[in-house]
Length: 371
Image 1: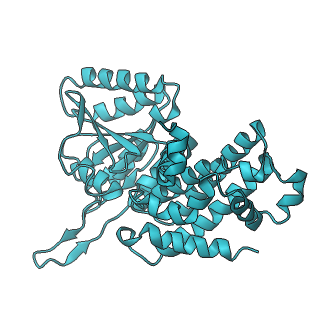
Image 2: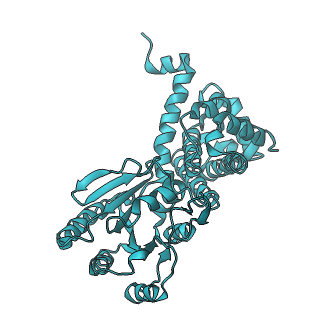
Image 3: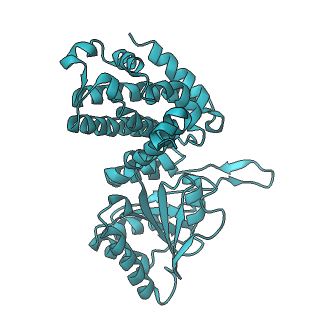
C-alpha cells in the first residue's frame, strides 16, 4: 500500500489542492477580520446603511445571529466584517441593554486575537427626528471608557436641512456627524431626486479610525470606494513578503528546495482577490497553470528559473541559497505583478465577470516579460 507522500506524487492535483488549503489558512493572517458596532434606535436606517456599504445581501434576511434580545451579529458575505446591531436605544430599560452591550464588548476585547476586538461604533441618529437622546449620549460616553471610538452618523439626510440640529449634535459629541443618505430618493415618475450621499466620507473616517489589524478587512469588505483597495493589497503583499522572509530566515534552503515560499504566495494571491471582492472559488484554475509545475517538488530547475525572473543573478548569491532577503524580494515582486494583473482586469471588467483563467493569463505574461 502506498504512503500518503507516494499517493501525492502519483496525483499532483491533490498536492496542489493541499497547497491551496495551506494558502487559504495563511490568507486569514494577511487580510484579517473586523468588528464594528452599529447602534441606533429602531427604524433609524441601520440596515440600509449596512447594505449600501457592504452589499445588499448583508441584511436582506432581516435578522442576524442573536446574542441577546437586543444585540445581533450580521456578517458580510465574505465573512470579513461582523456588524454588531445594538437595538433598544428608545426603550425605557435601556440601562440594562447598555450594560449587556458593554459586557459583550469587554469580553470580545479581552481576546488575545485582535481580529475579535470591537474598536469602533457607528452611532446612527435619524436626521429627520431632529433630536439627540440621552441614551445616545450615555452610550458614547460608556464606549469611550472602554476605549471604543464612535463615529456619529446622521441618517436620512433629506431636505429640509436644519443647521440648529447640526449645531446641537456638534455641541454634544464634538462632531457635526457624517450626514448620510443611503437610499436614493425618486419621485412618482421614477426620476432620482436625491442621490446617495456621505458613504464615501464614512468609509474614509472608518478607515482612519480602525486599527491596522482590522483595516484591511474593512477595505476589502466595503463596496463603496474602489480606489483604496490597491493600497490595502500592497499591505497584503508586504505582510506576505515578511512572512516569506521569516520562514527563510529560520531555514535557508537551496533554490530548488525552497518551494516553501509557494504556499505563502498562494495565500497572498487569495488575499488580494479578497481585497478586490474577487471570488476564490475557482482558485485552482489560476494556480494550476501558473504555479502547478513549480509546486510539485519534481521541478527544481523550473523553480530556479522562476526565481531568476525576479532576482537576476540569484544563482550566484550565496551559492543559490534562498535566505530571508531573497524570499522577501521574490514574494514582493511576484505580488506586485499579480496585483498589476488583477487591477488591469478590475478597472475594465465587472467583478462578477473576472475569471481566474483571465488573471492567470495576465500574470503569466507579466512573469514572462521579466528580464
